[in-house]
Length: 432
Image (cartoon, rainbow, N blue to C red; front, side, top):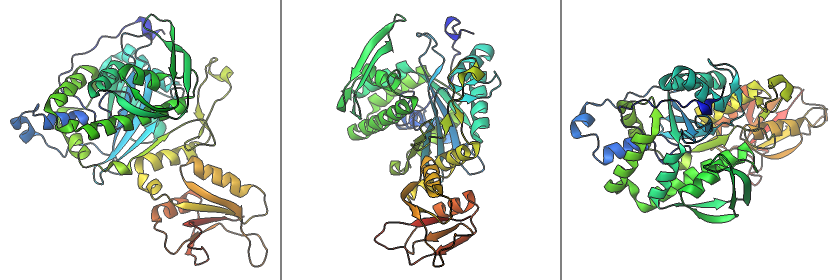
């Protein structure tokens, strides 16, 4: 099926839309800026603000509100409804705090429009069932994959991203490595060369968009990281220039949101998200990328033989249990990762390499393992049962609880043997 040759009609939107510090598109790491705009610039009107119930956010069993954010090229480009950027944002209204997870385009998932790459699901659903149903189907597919209920979704085309950055006057971004992409799409279904050098760069909207989308010379993991870096740069520009208090700028941004965002968030929810957004401490944001590099945080995917998937390159979880644990840590229990516990993994068995394997597993889940070695008992015999040793001054109860449950460990004890100079908070001793 060729989605690009079958344009999909846009439905008329009747409500204002949203976004927070991403403001403009695929990089929306927080999703309620439009509500802040509407409230602070007086666009809602006093009567509307009085009747809106702010306690209307849908939440899961953990009290989180979860949103799916998609970035698409739009009707002006070939394959314009394929999802070029995919993020899940989890908001804890009580803390309040935010977690952001980027998913690779090639992740293979099941959906109501068939088993396919995740970046194709929204396009196929929208073509077959229309715009509102497309949001519902992609939310359902990723809820099934993650095991986390997704309450709302938004789709933003790249024009919003580009125009919004230009409206900000550009952004400053640190580029960690040179990029040269000779296959970046141009406006005539051909290619152009995109080059950016390492170091601090000032991007206008067009350059920032190319930086976010370029993928021929780097991995999807790198690209997702670049998109999250752009999000932080946008937020910093907004805060440093005081745009929140600039009524004229707010109205200009709000006009962009209203024209460019397809979402199932209604006005009441919009304002409720804005209320949460204005109370968030952005120092507590947890962000991660699900990827196929086993040496990296979130590197839990692999590429199976293409012959099993009609010659396509796709990504699947190596271990669904580990992947589910990672998703749960990032999106539902980010406070565990924010403890930043320093962990030592020690091998108390006779089998070589056990500690190294477990340490690599924990690093993929997002933990800091700073020491790997062997555990020597007084008798010289192997350790029978795995256990945890906790430093007396450690404040890492969330990490201790996770490790106990994940490895089915019942023995946990505080140990004065852990030197205060070692920086170690928790020792995981592996037994037979």
